[in-house]
Length: 439
Image (cartoon, rainbow, N blue to C red; front, side):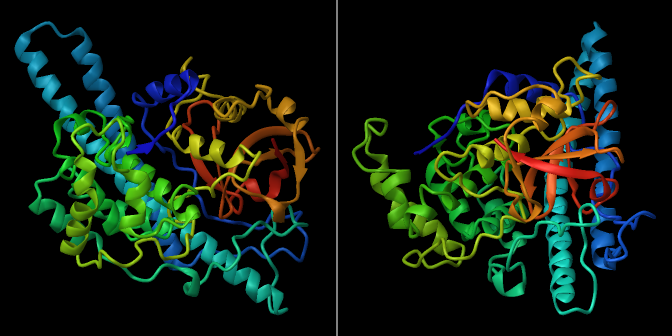
């Protein structure tokens, strides 16, 4: 069994508030870089490619569907709260379940679309920067003076080799009558994001909980035996959690890359929480399911290069640094409302303060206070967990977000909007960027 981390009371409170609001909603585009009138002549306004524009349109369309579904769901919940007739209550309860199921599916779809969009943004920016280094074009800049951060080596050669398709995984899970069927694309995206074969995630879920069909695992959305008994808000979150665990320092970083090596830590023999010695069969079961999916159980299952772009997963924390872990925690706050709209919501500064508090780091709860704390970081040195600041033409800082990597950050935009992801290359962020701090 793998070990998990508990969530702080503050994060638990704002996550509860997010259940009422539409996650990752809003129409602020991640693309649409435009050239300000006052920008330096060396700054090139690079329009997104048709492929990126289509990916952005898909994101915005799904966000609109989530908004509409959430609005209907809120209306049904309001009616249900005041209903007294049993027939009406039954009808509204059924509607609520149907709408919540649709919303969950839309959120899963949006997560995949956003990962695709972020990958396209980073790839196009990398091409632009490479072209500029040959003197044939200018580079994008955050403020007209500095080159934005890019993940080095983002090209076709560094991406994971083609693996199983989402439809193949979904077909297999369907034959197992698994509630995970339909999430094949998330298995693939989250597996490839950290350089692991997504089929091993499916195989582990089979060995641990019969692919999520085991009743107790359904109550906590944990088909992988993580924790033990670690609770996740959704199946998608559990898949990402398992992928991050295998791709992190405990497994990938420790050289545990085969099914046999993974068992030594994931399901060790003779441990106290396995009184029936069920772990004796773990390797054989995982290997059998992995083979059923077309894999070689004796070969390494953690082989590729982690791109960290598809699922916005920050790298494992270096000793003595809490930023990457804080960035990971921030991803769990997507969709949380603003404090002005909900007392359990977050301002931009509270978002940063909250996720660092969960890591044992005390920070101010104001933008100005955060800007005056920590170590200044140059744009090219940015890494996951660095606070990024924005302001007006006078240089006054008035907004903060948390950098995730690949030129994107997470933030609480303001009243009437939910916690979301934005691009440093987008408007108005590229022209109002003031600097970054590391805590």
